[in-house]
Amino acid sequence: MDTIVTAGKLNSNEIFTLLKQFITEVIGEEFVEEMDISMESSFNKDLEMDSIEIVAFSEKIKAHFGEKINFTGWLSNMDIDQLIELKLGMIVKFIEACQ
Amino acid sequence: MPIIKVNNRDVHIQELNTEAPETILLVHGMFCNLSIYYFRIAPILARNFHVVMYDLKSHGMSEKITSGYDLDSMTDDMIHLLERLNISSVYLGGYSFGGLICLKMAARFPHMVKKLVLIDAPNPNDDKTRLMMDAYSRESLESYFNGPGQKKRGKRLLDRKHRLYEYIFQETTIKKDVLQEREFFSAGEIRRIEHDTLLLYGAHSPCIGAGENLKEKIRSSALFALNGDHDLPLQEPETIGNMMDMFFRTQPAQA
Image (cartoon, rainbow over all chains, first blue to last red; front, top):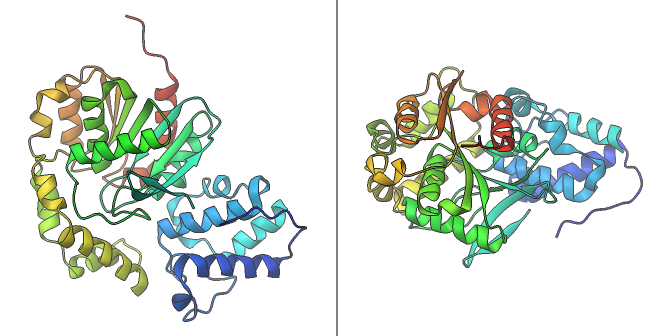
């Protein structure tokens, strides 16, 4: 069960580790083991996540950070090409700025 | 992620702005999922409405089901979902095959639908749709995704898509069920629909004729040809979201 965590600010490495954990939960450990996930990894090209998996990933971010991170609001300003090209590092920066 | 039991089956739903008094229910198309609305269109609608999106059976993260893809069964599923969510009536929006489900819903259960938006809903009598289903193969899927103008997809993504198509085409009754709906647009029930209906079609979509057909049959309807083809929700999400929002918020004209 996802829970909202109200602990203090996370640094970029901690956010990155958390997001990697979410990705593992969504696409499965067997796929993640074959990947070299970095800040430069893009969701579509590198992580090969499809749209419904990105929905599941977004929900995990919302469930973890709650109201203070308007993740879907941020995504809603992007067009489809920007979403496809979205890199993990951009999300880390966004979450860091919102905290 | 909310997977709820509806009529003893797992259904994936997403909701936005649950505090709003009125609800919009959004229905995606065949081989698609709720993400078609989730990222761009639903956030616009959620400024003023409670928005519910759900994955149709065997799609997205909902449970795989082998039968019941005819429009009666698909609207029965919708009724069960609304009962489960305790919602008595909704503004309804559907894309492609989802548009046909919404149309059927307005015909069968008019009291549960406040207004209707159909986005590039095809005529089920259109041969092109059925030929596409018959011609399906992994090769054609690969060429569709990686052909001119398409971004190269990785093996995992292609495998996932392939498994979905394989399952839906080969292991469910979908082909037979869709075929049995061929005369849907000719049925008298369409002409009896009285809801205010917004028809949003791609100006370059092969479905635009279906939009013109419905415009002629549904008394209180307006057709807009937007800049795009059948992928309209991906091409013009902001326009679609804003038009739907305005249409749903506008009071019907007094007779």
